[in-house]
Length: 463
Image 1 (spheres, rainbow, N blue to C red):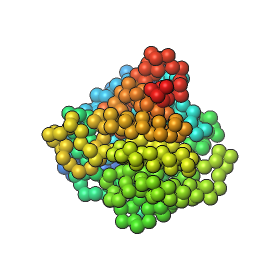
Image 2 (image 1 turned 45 degrees about the vertical axis):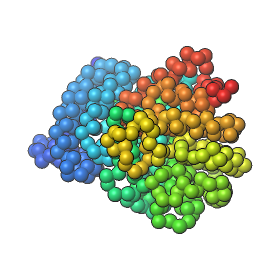
Image 3 (image 1 turned 30 degrees about the horizontal axis):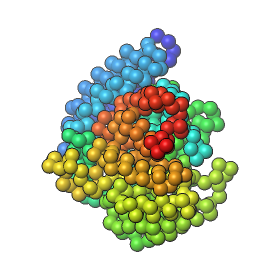
Image 4 (image 1 turned 90 degrees about the horizontal axis):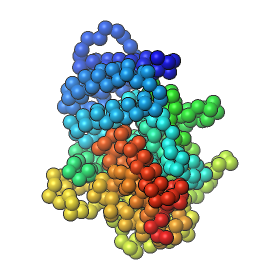
């Protein structure tokens, strides 16, 4: 067994013991040694009714998969270790279905925040590299806003191999959002309906976390190490730690522009790009900001706030706007005109939909209020993506979001006009194992059709 294998084995053993003791404490088991446990226990993350299920399932799963598996992969190279880790995650992920959707979400964030997710050590295929806004993405597949709302687990999520992670939406003042239950699975269609309502810890808490992470990233750059490389499951990660910040407004705020400006002033120094979210269906009146005059006035104020700050040679972070899939042709024409006239840096296309496609009608939870995401959104969001690409004449970078669950789906969005793509619902259902699969499938799609890069394929359906 080589030095790296021994190190991995010891680290895996310690991590397994650490997690087991955390669970054992929560279950009132006796422990024979006092070791350091994560600062946030499982009992803090989950409500009482979910704790017993969690304790029973996780105790056996962790001991069997992390410790036992660590002994196996301790003699293997990095690629084998990474492959095993993602395979192990795919075996554990079905356990999440035993929890209420929001509890499962909180548990996933907790796990990522404490390094209990696999880490990608295999380099991304060169064909997936994207250069945009002066930034290099090792691959175009990102994690959409709404998953890590409060920037609790950025390092762990980037370590999974995402090309970028978008946190938020972040509101200036902390707010609880809508009452529970507010997240509903429609498993037959791989869909979710949510009405979180911009639940957020506020910009102060998020700024504190992003500031600490920003310092670690800068230190990694100066020392030549990659952000996230201290994980026990990897010696390095793919990706370059690109983080976007999605800004929202408070539900009771009467001045939306002031909320977004406050977000820019506080968080833009930690962001590789910023997103104005004016398209969530769960904040009353928010989508009205997509009207031509309202959007134009809002973007002007936000751009002014960003540009009045002092920036280094790299300049200010790009500013994007996230739009709804429920827009009319005239709405889209207006948004495209504003985007072109004000020269914004990009559009995220799209948010969740309030429509209910025929494929989910009659299914459990299909009548719940909120935004629908997942597979039923794919065709709806793609139609908007195609229209926006044509209306903006391909001059504004687009981020395709909505219903992606395979590399072929990601490829279709790129051909429709997206330079980058984002996951959410499929990741929530399938867990970490979906990411290497999508990247591999996407690379195969590009090679199959003779493209040498993502850039060559962007908007190919329109040529």
